Image 1 (spheres, helix red, strand yellow):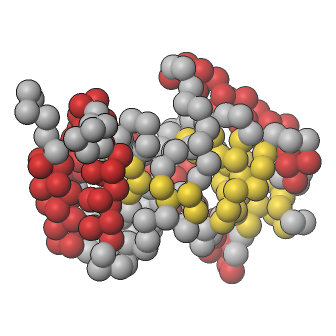
Image 2 (cartoon, helix red, strand yellow; image 1 turned 90 degrees about the vertical axis):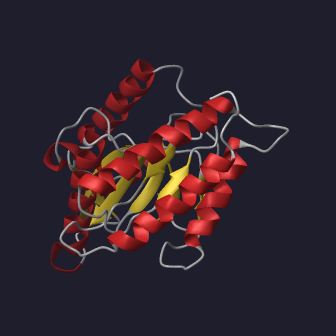
Length: 238
């Protein structure tokens, strides 16, 4: 979720319960700040600065498969509106079967956001699943973006020597879910994906403001391109 940044490797949780418990732990740490500075969790070693996006600062939860995103208000609350929209979009996409990073056990943006401070300013924080992936595939505005993603899908799934049928199956399921979503729903604004290195899962990340008109026809073309690449890699026994 950080532009132009290849995130470091963190061991995946042994099961979903362990991951859920980790999200509850870091959420409680945020609540325990009682509106205080996020820097306290950096100073005590709970969080480590990781990078930044257009609207938020990202902190790695040390030793756990989570990150914390923190946004100050911005001009007239613009950054808060942006992260609220992002959370709502992620929850909607998840409900529609699209693979997205988990936000922990929350069902609304209001529930997800926690009031804190950052650099002396009021801020809002939320937790998100860490995705071990190449986050530096380039901007989706680039004409070469769909090719870069297709190459990354092939790289992660593996060639002849290191091919993984499990990673192929995961990528296939996630791409199928995206194809279905685009057939029955409107576009995903600011549509972008990353490919999880260990699993091959295709995660949709950082969705944009749903009130902004996207580019549905182009995004469908991307999916067709990725489908062709994935079909070339299809295991012969399937």
